[in-house]
Image (tube, rainbow, N blue to C red; front, side, top):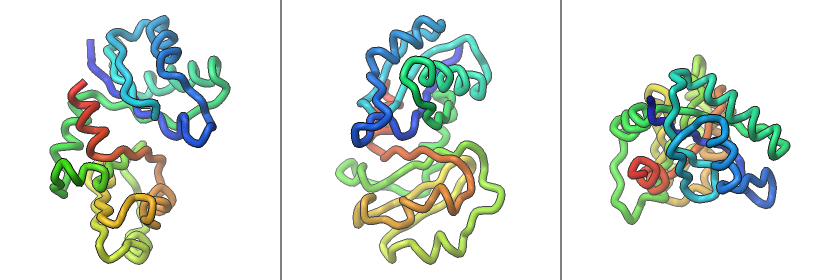
Length: 175
């Protein structure tokens, strides 16, 4: 049995794509997933499964959300070990007070042809970023909401992403 993390993108944001975590846990349990935990209402689910294929788990969860809640979020499913490697590979160090300034963009796959020139062009002078394995790391000392790079990263990378800040990832790994 493997421990997994599912990161659902764009749920419970601005009154759209409502996905009550308590209901989601109930439905996922009925599918045979075990020891399900969620963290905040933004689509972070930790669980155990006998299934060993992340793509299959992602499709199962997406189909369930469509069936029960009427929309299909982008979902990235990682083993807990893969999540830990992403954390360990982060090229930037932040203090706990800065945990909301460091962001991990989890990539559906490695970007084949990211637009590096445009990524550099729109980054604020204070921002730092790096693509490493299946993650795009972004440090935004002036705030995530002010970052054009944060807004355009997915398009410029050319792959589906979902982002979480350091604080959220730290909490997920502890669960």
